[in-house]
Each structure stands twice: as structure tokens, then as C-alpha cells.
Length: 476
Image 1: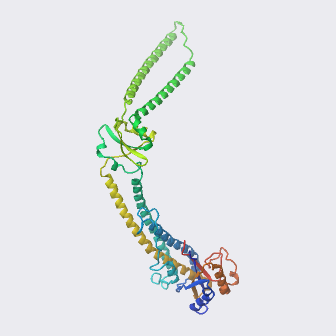
Image 2: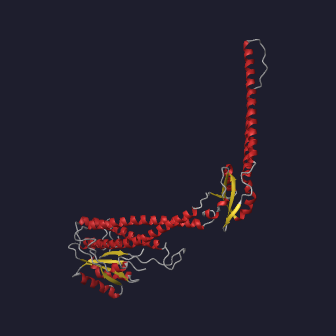
Image 3: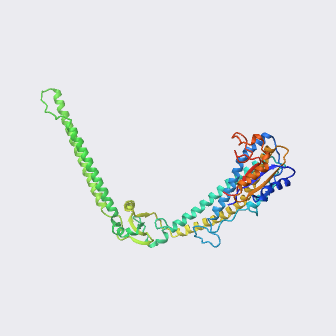
């Protein structure tokens, strides 16, 4: 991994060539770095307050635009790996062909940076203000970021849909399409009969064959037993309540005939009450008899299986499961499904359609073509927009160096910027050489670290250098 580039800006002593030559003598000539001219045109300065505001904003915009460029690069690398390249197997899980390096036009990012030239057509430094140029770059980067997210999302959605179809077709009988395994002659559909497709684990297949025809009867028997138990409990509760009620009411004593009108009235009321209770009891007994008759009828009906005997046919098997066709009375379909769930048999929803597999294949082919089209578009989009955004990012870096140099060294504008690439392991020595060469630029009040409330003119926050310094890291 290469070291980050440094942009170093200092005031000119004579002219830019002389300034760069002096820097070269203490850095590149001693094997500490490779130096390149980083030419920045003069721009519309504006007021000091405007420059102070831009300096603060540029730091945030620098980070944002750089992140957009790297997100485009990362998206390109991830998208590239989703399609097999020449010489790779189509079903390979990992691509061996590395994604090509994204370039700026026809140059690598390093070559573009080392030979940086301001694009005055895209960013007219003499006609447009710094604010206008910055706003243009931020607007373009935001637009590209949103467009990239949209395009990647659409591609991934189509790709995931194709993958889901493939996974389903390559999966077990629990998920794959069943049409290819079900001949038309095995489908029985009448006003009273229905055909079900049951997926059974192969280790349970023999068990299923022995019990499938009576699964619903067994389920009914368990339900009846539970219902009888509940009725028995209810009857016990009702009897207990009745006994408790009788215990709280004193026995009716024979009334003495005192010959009074009140005694006759009470006697008549008692007879009427007893008559009403007798009729209520007779009515309850009649209802209970009807209930038991209906229950007997249902039990007799439910004791007959709804599954057609010997209708189970094994249509196909895979490594773990078997697909079994079963014919069931329509009225017993839901009960049979419930009984199957209790025993871990899976009833697949299935409707016979001779063209279903062709439809799925056509859908898959259409989606696959769309996926490849989106992939091609995304690859080209990333290449084109990376060029635009990376170039914009470097221009934004140049604007930041310009603003900080003017704030540091004052007007008129007279500074020289150099791109410095430290050699491996030489960062500390290079920093020491720069300090010796440009230490005189630091005034007494700037030799200490900047206070957090002060404007950052160094590019490294509290780490202050007598020269303007910015880092350009091309790696993630």
C-alpha cells in the first residue's frame, strides 16, 4: 500500500521553479520523497471573512467528496465480482479475476495527481467565485452519490430475485417447483375429490404409507376424546354448583292449613313453581337427547376416512425427501393438512399447470438479461463518474490549499504548492527536513498547537506546521 501524498505550500522566494528546486534539494535529492509540481491558478479571493468561512467548509466538503469517490470505487469492485469474466466458471462462488483499477480518463489516479493540471473549462477560476466552484463540486458529488445508491439498489434487487429463483429450483422438494414431477394422469379433481402433494422425509416414508389413509380419523378421535373430557368436566362443575345451591336453601316445610286466604295462595304458588321446574327438566332432557343423537351421527360420519385408500403414489425423490401424491375428499382437506402438520409432513400448495415451468424459465431468462444489462450500465457508470468525482476532489483539494495559503501568507497571492510522495519509512525524516527548511515561517504566536477555537490552517487540526499541509490518501 502506497503512502498518502502530501501537498506542501510555502511562499515563493523568487519564483515557483526556484521554490520547488529548493524543496527538492532537501527532500527528493536525499531520497526522502518524490516531488511533483502541484500548480494552482489564481482565484477570486473575496473578503477575509469569506475566506475564513470557506476554510471551515472546505474541510467538510473535502471529506464528503473524497468519500463519494471511494464509494464509487468500492461499488465498482463489488459489482465486478458478481459477474463471471472470461475464463471463469459461471457457477463459481468467488471470482478470481480482480477488478480493473478505475482510472481518471486514461490515467491512473496516481498519474493524474502527479501530473495535475487545473481544468479551467470545467472550473473557470478567473470567472467564477470560489463559492460557486465549491457549490458546483458539492452538487455534482451529491447527485452522483444518490444516483449510485439507486442504481446499485436496483441491480441488487434484480440479482437477488434471480438468485432466489435459482436457489428454489436447485433446492429440495420442500421449495422447488413441482410441476416437472407431476404427470397430468396423477391429478384427480372432481366436485368431491382433490389431489394433494405431500413432501415426506425419506426416513418417514414407510411410516407415512402405513398411516396416511387414517390420519384424519385419528385426529377426529383425539378431538372427540378431548371434547368428551371437557363435557365431563362441565357436567361435574354444574352438578357441584347445583348441590351447593340446594344446600343453601332450607327444605320446604308442609304448610299448616289455617284456613286463611294467604295459606291457599302460597300453596298455589308452590304448585306452579314445581310444575315449571318439571317442564324445564323435561325440556333439558329432550335437548340432551338431541345433542347425543347429533354427536353419535357425527362420530359415525367421522369414523369414515376422507382419504382415498391406496391413493398414495411416490412421484419422485431427492437426497432427503419424497414427493407423494394423495387423493382426499374435499370436505376433509383441511383436517388432513392439520394431521400432516402434527406428524411433520409438508403439504405443498400445488395447482396443476402444464406451462408453469415454462413461465418460470421465461421469467428467469428475462430477469437475467435485465441483470446483465444493469451490470454493464453500472460498470460504465462507475468508470465515467469516478473520473468526474475524483478529478473534482483533487480540484477541491487545490482550492483548499489556495484558501489556506492566502490566509496563512497573506496578499498578494504568491505561494508555491508541491505534491510530495514520501518514500517508504521516511515520513519522520521528511517532516524533520521540512521543519528545518521552513521553520522560519512560524511566528512566535504559531509555534504552539492551535487552540480548538481557532481556524485550522494546517490541514491536521491541532498539529501545526509552518507550511500549509494537506494529505491526499488514495487508499481506503
